[in-house]
Length: 255
Length: 328
Image 1 (cartoon, rainbow over the protein chains, first blue to last red):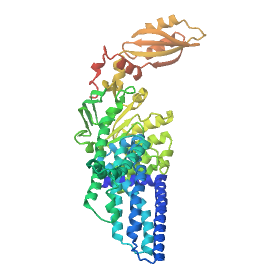
Image 2: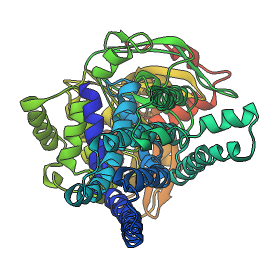
Image 3: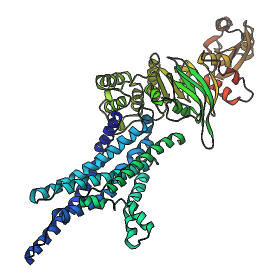
Image 4: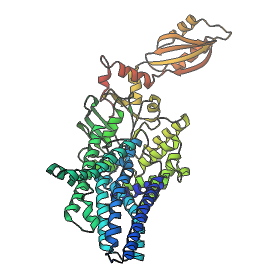
């Protein structure tokens, strides 16, 4: 436990002493802020139109603002995750510091968990900026907080899975750019797999759609905690980290 | 402290380390010597549990590297070829991080950080970013990192590579000063380094052990007879070389005296003797003959020559008999 904490602290520290963390936080805040502004503007517009027509169509902040925004956040996340994970192991391999970690009295699993948790922490701090936006909804409106909390849980689970995959890919190369590009490719593919079910109903299309990380987010965005989807993400996290430990072990046998 | 038996590392296409066996006693400095690509780094990586051996065994500080790697890792300090530094960290911060990794905490930790900073002369860059340090400092921080948890065994992979001569001397002195408390293995392909720093030498070539012995013994073994270089000048300018050779050869115990080179008026002769110490007699002979004796020095065979002899003449060689005779 203590070793995981040591690695976690070191990783988080190196995110925050380099520009990378601030760059990611800023970009995420700006992009999400833009989405928020648009979603809210649209919501207000519809509200005014409804009033002018004199119809009392039920308006719901959770359904019409928070839900689409959470889905947006999950997609924006796909683009940021490679940038978070690409350096995790690639950089240590390039500079040789991996030798320090690997010859210290600490288990591979502890190194991996520490790094993965640090990446997840950085992602969570990006989400904090979205919370800042949502805070306005609570100040001026009256949305339900429970679906929002479940949405955040979904975002963290989804990111956890993708970060685990990114961590794994980062162990495969010494080159951050390659690790980042490959992770981005995988993230993108895991997103668009869902489209297969758009025109095809055969079972293979269903399987592909099932593997898409986005499909499983829909229930979370709705504010529904579906154990089937939670288990999917937990499985991805577990497999990603498991492959990382294997990869680190094979690093020793090959290098 | 370290026992290596039939250690072998095989990759898909080649064998990097081939059945190496040796012992290192507690408190010794051992030089691990070989040309580039001989398998030095691979062997060290196996000793530090970074690479698992294909076959054979290595016991470091009482624990098997395959069976109990965590116990081994607690007791070793390792400086890889390039010091494993994080450029974005400050020196003290980095040393504290490594200390924590090695299991230090609290007051112990800060005490050790101060101590190694002092010991490795990096106290003045405590608050500097590692990425901004000069090569010499980086190397010393690397060493500080290796000794932070006061390990029983220190494994240093080419600790002086890439340093300037002054830094090399400082690093060597530092390593020597560490010898008492730690057992040290250092690898190098620079031979004078071994002569100056180490008590014991392990020579490997192409993954095979060529010799293990003390530096002193190796030098003696490689050349039974003593050989002396004399630089002689004639009083009035010229000097008949054959006369000098003949005179030197007459000194008791000298088996061969030969002119070697000359720079202007300074002639260098090489004298070999069978029975050891003849330098006094030689000096007297030269002076009595009316010549000037400018210099007289033993031409002990450098490790370099021994090394080339051992690694080059492997096939027919006397080398195998050297193996295993040392380290008693």
